[in-house]
Length: 160
Image 1 (cartoon, helix red, strand yellow):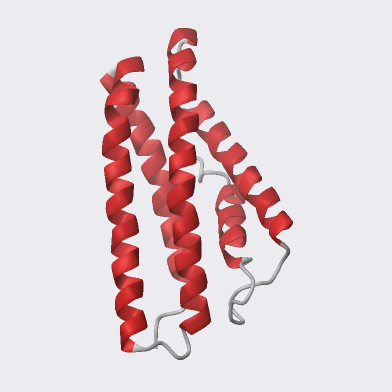
Image 2 (cartoon, one colour):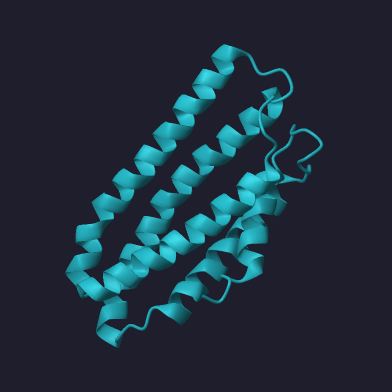
């Protein structure tokens, strides 16, 4: 894999860490900068998919509208994750047991919803692509997700 363009990962991480009110391990920045970074991340990811998923013209015609819809739904989950990280950042030094429980429950809900979203879109992708292309696409999505998760895990401090 071509390391998914480091700018994709750094862009997402920067976007997530730019939420106002976070502790010293995060950076403050205006929300318009966050929007710019997020748009760059989306464009880089789409380019990564384009470069690694060889599609015929007719496959591409069916695939890209579904991809765009899927990315919008993924973005909603990403927004929930950003909010979760922001909440964690606000309380991380003084985390109560109750807040930790809510944080854990919310995190697991986001992961469950992500899996449900992947399953919901599977038949849509299968209508326009052969199963091998769908599997390749899901692999590419998983690679992006795994790298972002790894990077976030390394940057978010462990709860005390």
